Amino acid sequence: MSMSEEINNKTAEINIEGDRYAAANWELTTHFADREFARSAASVIAPLVEKEFRHERPIDVMGLGSGSAVYESVVCEELKSRGVETNLLVVADRQMGSLRGARNASVEVSPISVLADLSDLPISTPPPEALPRLILSRAIEHYFSDEGLAGMLKETARVMNPGDLYITQLSSADEDSLPAISAILHRVSGKAHRYFGTSRYIEFVRNVTDEAEQQLFDVESKSPGEATPQPRGTIELARRYLNGKFIELNTEAVTESGLNREWLMAEIKAIADTERSLSLGLRSGEIAKDQAVARLDAFIGDTSCFKLFRSVVLETAKEFAGVAGHAGEDLIIMRNSAGNEDVQITFRYPIILLKRSRATINTQS
Ligand SMILES: C[S@@+](CC[C@H](N)C(=O)[O-])C[C@H]1O[C@@H](n2cnc3c(N)ncnc32)[C@H](O)[C@@H]1O
Image 1: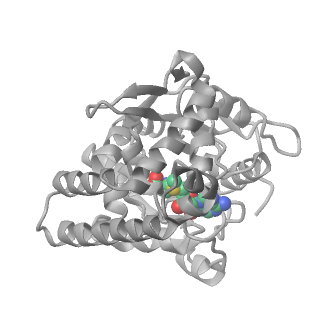
Image 2: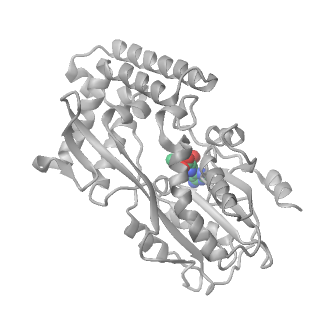
Image 3: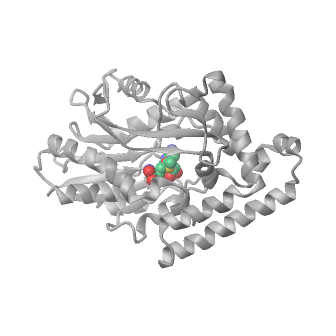
């Protein structure tokens, strides 16, 4: 059975409640759709792959938790531009909404999209003579429990031959800033993210072993590089997280503010409508991305619900930052250009190279 038949036969029927990640207006709300951002990582990754695989044969590429696979596609393009032949075979994610974009115009190749949980990939263990395999992921680790992440790493190791590469890009920040960042995102969106700093992730990987207690991956003690850091003020967080869920989670702050809930919900609807119409304009080429984002930010910034959102973010940040005005290096309380107190978070994306260890034997199939 070919790989594609096998995958189609076993497509998992798993889904989770979408998190607006793949919403229509995704292009305006996050940098994950941005090809330049993906290229900043691809330029770190390509030399690593060239060095490890030395252009011997074409490389099979897979994406895990790929969302719409813009990232995997850009990495393959970068490799191809350097003369490395790649086949982007498969991208897997457990949210249908995220995967749907994998065949859109921004992805030149058309990989097979698999709706699957990463702890149970409908992909068989490769035979020893299989082409070298490069597995990619970006910004997925914080979605997992420790047990889930260990399971995902074991499953990834199962679909690799010794010497194959798994290159992941953590969604991260300075380790001292991470508790405050998680608390803010939890307060505004209800998400219980568990971010890893580079050293904690590397230590985690080193503790994932097979039945014979052999490490599954060789991993260096340092990250070989990172994608462009993304500084974010409250307005940028609001683009993604200011929605009905925020009001639902912060009823006390709404009551204390004296603002009318129905009024706030009407504003949120108006923001969503503005996002939608700007996204349409962007797609039809009527408006450039920078202009669309600036207009959206101006609209959001004038609303009462944004002022409430900013005060909730600030209050949470201050619990961690105290009088120092910052928590770690990547969460800073500062005055923005309009003179308002604001929080700036710098999200960082370190790249980590994992090589399937040669010491272990693949026993599962
Ligand atoms: C922050 S998004 C990043 C998406 C994509 N890698 C990118 O960088 O554009 C995290 C993705 O991981 C996926 N994900 C999280 N846990 C997963 C799991 N257990 N199995 C499969 N996909 C998962 C989510 O559905 C989501 O699409």
